[in-house]
Length: 115
Image (cartoon, rainbow, N blue to C red; front, side, top):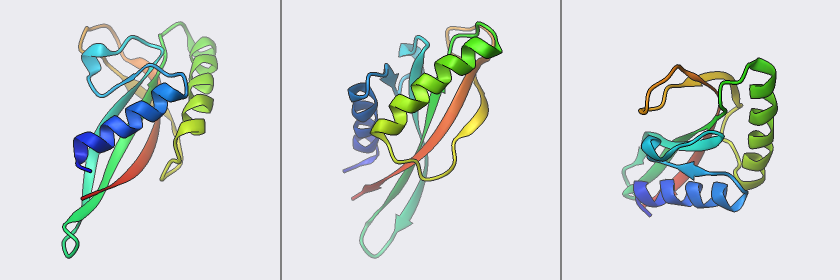
């Protein structure tokens, strides 16, 4: 497994849980999940490592109450598919390439072993 495979595995798991998910932010249309590879821990003797991926659950900006409702639903679905490596960050914002202001988001971090 390489980094692209790890990203694809997480995307597939999220889609299987009923979420629109992509690693390409140009393909996102909230509510959705953005998968971003953010780090790699090298295990030099084995030649592999552990890739860290952040999953941003993104809601449309329709006010705080509506965003929290949407994000909570996305989080429930994501947790059915993924086992986060750290606590979930609830105070994130994501600006998509299409423009507009920052959108409310939660962030999960997951890890995948690669060769």
